[in-house]
Image (cartoon, rainbow, N blue to C red):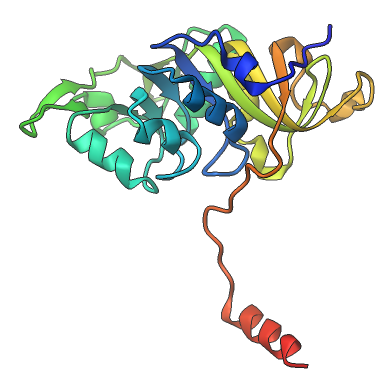
Amino acid sequence: MDKVLDSPARAVADIPDGALLAVGGFGLCGIPSTLIGALAAAGTTGLRVVSNNCGVDDWGLGLLLRSGRIARMTSSYVGENKEFARQYLSGELEVELTPQGTLAERLRAGGAGIPAFYTPAGTGTQVEEGGLPWRYAPDGGVAVASPPKEVREFGGRRHLLEEAITADFALVRAAVADRHGNCVFHAAARNFNPLCAAAGRVTLVEADRIVEAGEIPPDAVHLPGIHVDRIVAADPADRRIERRTVTAAATATATAEESR
């Protein structure tokens, strides 16, 4: 079955207001920026988003956040986005912070049909006890707080019950996808993308390169096509480096070479 569509706009056209989205990537690495851009252009709002982070102020999910399209975030790290902090602290945005490994496993469990699991992560903290502010009130008080979690002991160690995540739609970026939806991810861009894809009831993939069915060796497939519903070509210009770090030694070497 050929799953390739002719435009990102067509791929996201039926995502309704208030949908729950699982969005792949890590930082700005491997994020489905083309699909996010199409969703921003579509005007879809009230979105509930599950993603490791929320982009930066002017890129990735930050585009949707800046325009007030996101109502709730479930994330593990949000430190690169000042607008995110402003909306959260002012009560405009509901935020569920989750330990990173727990977030990954909640998505994996959702894709595997496992409704919940126990993990030692978060025991002895407010993750267990509840009371973490999910939404602030305009006066600075806590309007919505996290509930306490069920605790059980296994092997003499306490564990918390965490529920799986299943999303209405998943947005994913791959390096290569064939027309049947089999995908390959490049290096760290594999972070969260396969997990989000499996957790989505409808999964949209943007790929840097689309090939014919059979061109990807079976042993090289990171994500089987059974998890993928729609494929679009990624905009090759939709890439950014979040933090460029150059060592003093490298800078000195480059300067010396340029002066020759």
